[in-house]
Length: 79
Image (cartoon, rainbow, N blue to C red; front, side, top):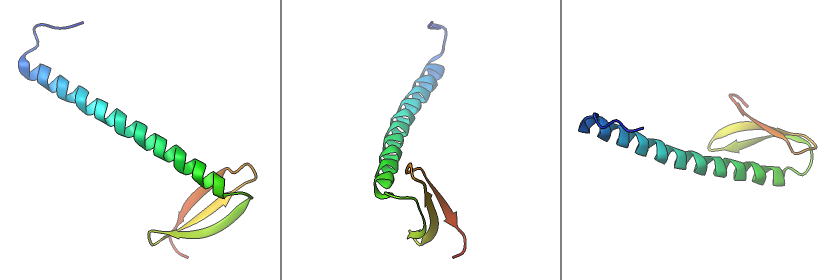
């Protein structure tokens, strides 16, 4: 339902808010797609149950995977 009594400032503010929301939806969907592709790529590499430490961007991570290629990645504070 529209409200013809809204002033121009209110209509502009709503329009800007809707635009911000729609841009956020686009970024969220892109990030979700990238995340899912990254998970699939990691699962492809994890061919057997394993547990190892890897370094990425000067940080260390413990990677654990099972037979179903489910995995967990935990940042390690000290190695």
